[in-house]
Image 1 (cartoon, rainbow, N blue to C red):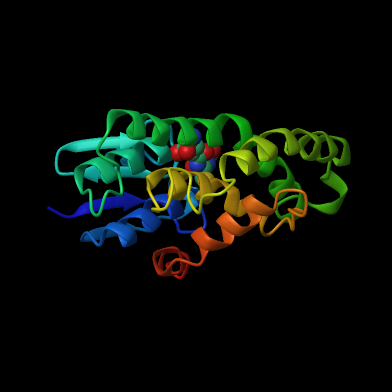
Image 2: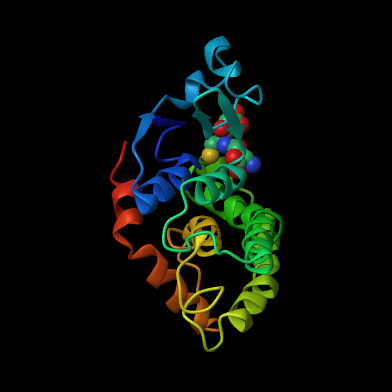
Length: 202
Ligand SMILES: N[C@@H](CCC(=O)N[C@@H](CS)C(=O)NCC(=O)O)C(=O)O
């Protein structure tokens, strides 16, 4: 059965595209355009009218982190989703943490910089967002002290999910000097061939 991933690569669908490349599973990429996410056909797949969405046989799923945790569990390879309940919980922890502590401020800056007309930009909102980031980044920096990846020496779905969010820090040229462990970890994750393959998709 081939899984289907909906959404252009230049969207959060990139997260799901990254994981299918990591897992080496056959997949079909439905690289729809953003203007079609509210169309009746797509709303049958994801009633939120957002991407990504996953179709795996009769099963449908939305929310990028849930999609990736599902794919990691179902098509697990080399401990990509670790075996122990505790390690799996840590994968959930870092995925939820990325979405709740980091995604919004990073996206605020990214949208303002690259998707907002100069006269519509909101420097106060950007300043506020930039002020919110050092706290979680210092938590992450501490968690990565003395280890290459979030759970130790192996790259897991926790790293993939969080790095896919953190990757937005690159285009905004966030200064990681105070967070050297985060900088090194992010480069380690984003240099993976599967990430590059996902990025080169339309
Ligand atoms: N929490 C959702 C967010 C999905 C989301 O907002 N996707 C954006 C594209 S990156 C979208 O579809 N936006 C269209 C819209 O909001 O109308 C996830 O992680 O999957």
